[in-house]
Image (cartoon, rainbow, N blue to C red):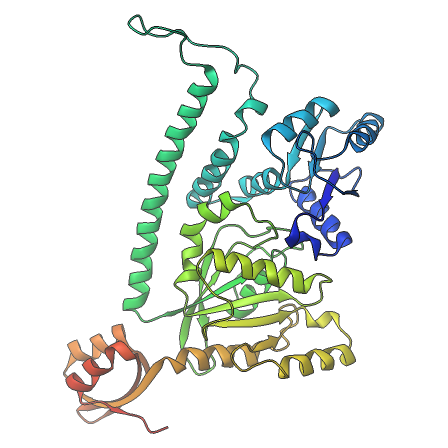
Length: 426
């Protein structure tokens, strides 16, 4: 496996080279590739034809021949012509970073929705590379009897077929989006708030998800161990409930095809009441990973610097000694109130209680607590409150219930006018 490295890629220039190399090797291993060689190949200028310079192409060609390498992975974005020329020069298959990530996603997608999104992303990527990957493209098909001139070329036919398939996939994904909207509407009627986990791949989101919900989502020391989104009930410290959503991990230079294709899945993040940005604070590239996640959030229309619904979770603090942990706590304490962070270990459970309290406080801040009394015989009213409000307490006294409920601001006037509710004193 070889890795291209160009300082011209400004987002990568600030990343640690060894960490980037480890990540590239990890991506290859994620689809069970055996990494024979993993090295950095610095270049001063990107060559339009081969990305690498002539000497470097020849040097790598010698290594390929000497080690009988069957696949070369370049940790960069290659144009179709660069990919084709490198394959000719090395007489082996070449994958760039986008192609490798698409292969991983194709392997990991289990649900119909995930498979649709991966296929859509792969077809959009492949459509521009037909000239490289298909061997029959010089052929032409004869035109109909009434058409003059040459017939439709095979490459045109293939692109047309791929275009038709893309259109069908987009229509199916629109149906998925409609279904998700119905599910979200159902959760809003039964007033569960949504908390979404986002973060760099392998930051520990699935381990944290399991810790918070007592679920058994696959959690492994592997890039993109989780692909398909998962929703589970989250129990809050004072008896409240929320829905916790685990999403696909982000990564530097996440292919734009995947960001576009996975919008149906990532809508859970867009609609979430609280977003937990889970960071592997022990990683040597933790700050660069934070910037990468923030960049993807901005692509989705979420400003990481604005709004009170984003909380940072510094995970894996169990990897630090007591002195280093205290230093991290001091750093966290000096952060501005609008950008708080919470130190946790999803593995050991350290800091989880404080995180849950913060989630509950954030959710409660957007809701109003009301006290009311309702006749026990008013079954319709009691049912409406259970559907549209969070019932905190409910006590039967003779022929009526004394209730304390928490409601959204939008439903405050309805509860006050219908049930004579009064706001609870602070």
